[in-house]
Length: 119
Image (cartoon, rainbow, N blue to C red; front, side):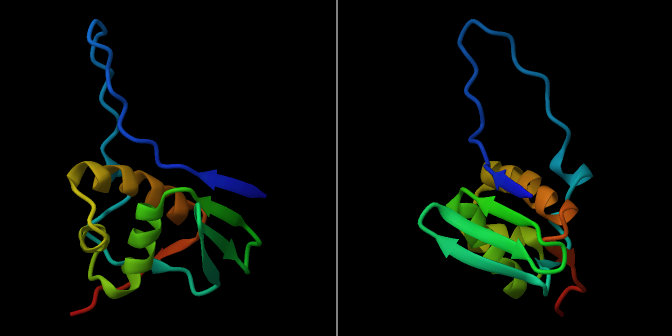
C-alpha cells in the first residue's frame, strides 16, 4: 500500500468568509514533548521531493512530500523530544503544529516509535 503524506500549509481565510472551526489540538493525537524515533525496521531514503519511508516489517511505503518534515524526522533520533526535533529543523510554532499532525500519521502507521528520553 502506498501513502502520500503531504503537510499542507495553513489555509488563508477569504476576507469575507467566517473563520473556520478550530481543528483538534495536535497534542491529542501526537505528544511533541515525548521522545520519538524512526522504527528500527524503517528505512528513510531522501529524495528531491522529500523522502521515501519503507517499513520492512509491515511492507508499508510512505512518501514525505515536505523537506522540512524530513528534517524533523531525521532529527528525532538525536533530539530529546519531538518538539526539540522541530526546533532543530528550524520549525516555528505554526510549522510544529503541522508537523505534529504528520508525525501522528507516521506513528499510527508504525513508522515512528516512542522511545525513552535521553537524559
